[in-house]
Length: 316
Image 1 (cartoon, one colour):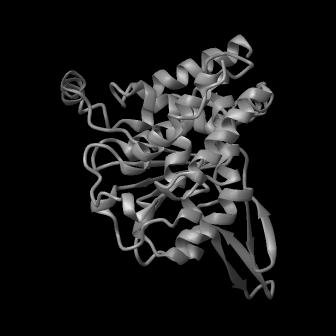
Image 2 (cartoon, one colour):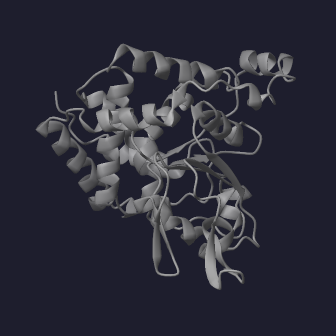
């Protein structure tokens, strides 16, 4: 990685940590997601900085940004856009919706109907949208950052697995520890000053980094390791729905991005091990006979996944 880009990634991390205190690993995973050309789902209880993290990531990059507040009455056209008849020209003119931005924040995505949620599927999968039989290319880079609250705070419409599968990663922020919370309380007047966030990356920088991530080498034994992990989730009696091929590809891509973030042009086993939970846990369906009925202190899908993959041999 060129020294200039390494410095920009460091600046990006520090820029976000200016507000998101005591969560360097969370910030790191968010950066890895955009380097891997993936979409990010941030799931946690209210008030821990989900929306703020998304805003800071977008504000740190010199690109277009749109926030969509998902509600029960939101329509697909409110996201994608709509064709409006122009009487002067006697033809319809397409008015682009907020999806036509480099980074789109889908805030509280589980609050809207499945029909509206599904409007994001094509955009997230192909970076294109089709309206009135015409296909429009979205600006590049393109990333959806969605937020939602955990089970007990769900709206009426939790995301189906088919849509969850489009997110490269799901991360959690968690409460800050006491020392960091005291710092936040002292600096609360500055926490709302997102407008003062410095642009440390251009859109062209992000695209160049994403291309370089694709060139990070993954040895044959590591690819086999990824395949064995996916197979283990499909064969486990604890899991009703295992990881798809899309999930296996996501794990490989996230591992490449982690290696790149750490200034390597090759993957090591730890790159894959660290990225297993954020890239795969939201893709599995825990078997009903193993559901505990509460999320408790540990999230059920992550705990089951951890147990299943612990028996998969790690290449040396």
